[in-house]
Length: 117
Image: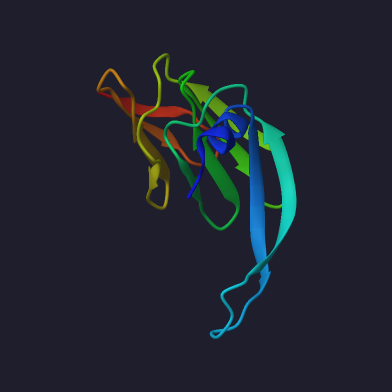
């Protein structure tokens, strides 16, 4: 469970943690911090990953996509309203909606807008 103070930390930094080891009998998991990135806004929309990217939607309306290995920003898209949903993806596109009810569909490879409705 994330405490209130930990939520404040998430407003400016996105940290990717990966499990290093665990066993079925173990309740303790060893994790390693892989990278962190400044987001500049609270992550309201949650964080999703695929095979190569991390998608984070912010209260500032920006969907930021980071390289999963390096943490470098791959591309970003400004939707102009707080992103309140987790990103959903298919083979070619990423979808999300904003607080104003607008649904966005973007090209996963470069963030170019495909559809807004």
